[in-house]
Length: 192
Image (cartoon, rainbow, N blue to C red; front, side, top):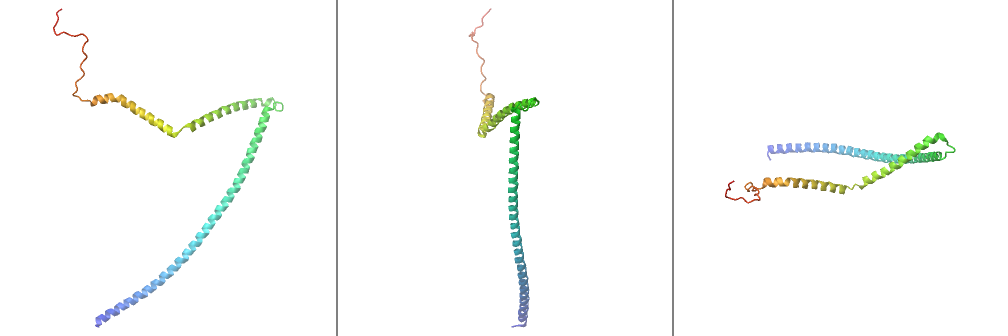
């Protein structure tokens, strides 16, 4: 072997050794980075587990709070209903009992009577309005609108048709001859 060839082989072997050393160093760096990545992933998983545990704990606390508030709200609402019914019963008794609750409440009784009449009228009107709202069938309304539009289109067509027909008829057609007089005319002139 020649010296040039030997020198090239030695240079290539030296490059190969340098590259191998660099690859070994890079593999150590990659291994260290992978180790840190695995540690970071474990930490993220732990944090996610804690977050999900806290979310479930919060949801449980919120549901307990809602149940307690709901129970209290139901109790308060029941008490309000009972109070209203008791006051209403007392007011009815007072309005009906003219012996114990005398003339000073006469104007109030008249107001109550007028209010009851107005309430009955309003209740009838509410029922009427509800019936009207519930009776509107969207399919039938759409059908009615479609029929109305169709009728309008036909009406416009029949009104405009004679004019369109005349304008489209051939212009070479002879004009209508004037109507002949009822009396026959003679060709011979008569003297007078």
